[in-house]
Length: 586
Ligand code: DGT
Ligand code: CA
Ligand code: CA
Ligand code: ZN
Image 1 (cartoon, protein in one colour):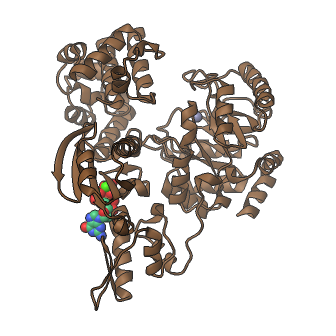
Image 2 (image 1 turned 180 degrees about the vertical axis):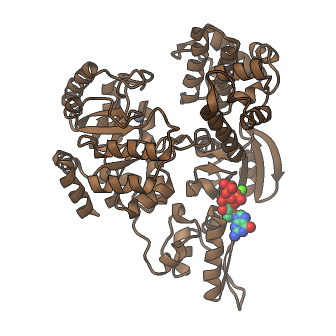
Image 3 (image 1 turned 135 degrees about the horizontal axis):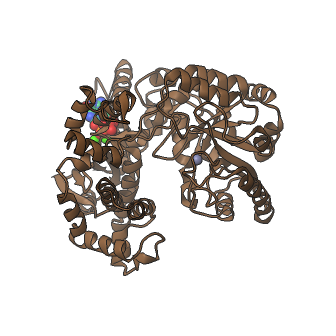
């Protein structure tokens, strides 16, 4: 059983205990365990079989360690099973409705007899939910929207779950089989779609038989759906399907091109090939007249054969990319290697795990020239945010660490809440002390679109706000984005020289591709940030780069491709001049 699944069990336990009215302390302990487990770099199953003591993990005590052991050994946990038996069957499903807390669940169960998502939807539609004291029409409407949203998301897996699963499979298979010459994800994952229907893996080898045999026997494979000479399909423990194809290396280029898709892109490519008197399939390109097959060991030569510029996977959406490739008009897209720093990073001063000095050293080891440490403002008091007094100490500490670290610029930063009324969570005099201010919405996310637009535009107009963090606040598959007039926001950002963040955390990817593309057209410059809460997460920048590429961004569209001295000079300019400088750069 993988960590994700184990974490879900503890989350369920926390939820059920809370519905039951257990002590906050107990509930928090299970929540903390779930959070810790979901972020562990190593599988618990592996740790246990290596004989490691789980109690060395912060937040995991004896009781929880024993429960994990039982779960890993037997696939069950008596405590969990007993707890579930105290509730009607649909209760756990109710817990997964975004925006519906255990307190409300307990009330709709006891006061309305609601025990399933379908019944809840009914109660939300017919007014019974809104009629509960202290609940109201607005909450009922939000719950209804959540249910309907969750339904459209159900069948596809968020990339935050699919990508680590794919990377685990690739690593495990490479370790087991030495006959593999190339192995990579294709399909929607390679295109970096935010949700994944199924995983597609493609492989180059002279020994497909042994590779396929090892593939279907990988840990985490729950069921083999098909297994032939060149392909196999399996279901993983969590229900995700994986399609696997193996070919000799001389066909690998055609294979990965075909299975990267998208279907629509392939159709346009085939039409283009037909016009040249060629026919394109997963094995190569054949001459329509003679039938002679040309094979391709890499994609570049395949696109070249068709007289096309190479099309990066992130652009293969079946839109304008084939026409542009014919004209040689696909721009050089930004690459993760172009990024020279990270400007949204948390430490243990707020809700991060690691101390400032650890994050700074880790950032330097990533090759960064600069890093902004942006712990939270005090805000709602949930993320251990910094009071203005602690912010001053934070600034002083950052200067000390910068001196000691040597060779990396440490920007005095903050992630400041944009309050519901559009004001900032620190006074201007505190903001003026900072080098870098990320302003983000963390509360009142259900405001009416015009109110929300106004709120964000006021933050953009603040002379000290350098960037807007994770603009839409969506969590892929879990929380809907805010509603706002995005064109107005993008125009205000471009006008004022306020950059918009592409938050690289896989759960967020916010801004999303289509917003990036639109904002770019309207003159916005972006910053690609990891939003790291641990040192390992600094590596997330690569995901942000992929989103930027899906939004057709070049290096010039991204602020943190600048060398340190140019960035610092730019930040010293007042915003109106900075806006001019950013425009000149594009
Ligand atoms: P997904 O799995 O729904 O997230 O999206 P994809 O794009 O990964 O789709 P999938 O797994 O059905 O197929 C992988 C790729 O294989 C797809 O992007 C293009 C190619 N492919 C599959 N079936 C067809 C087809 O019938 N026609 C063409 N032209 N390409 C196909
Ligand atoms: Ca797929
Ligand atoms: Ca597939
Ligand atoms: Zn943050």
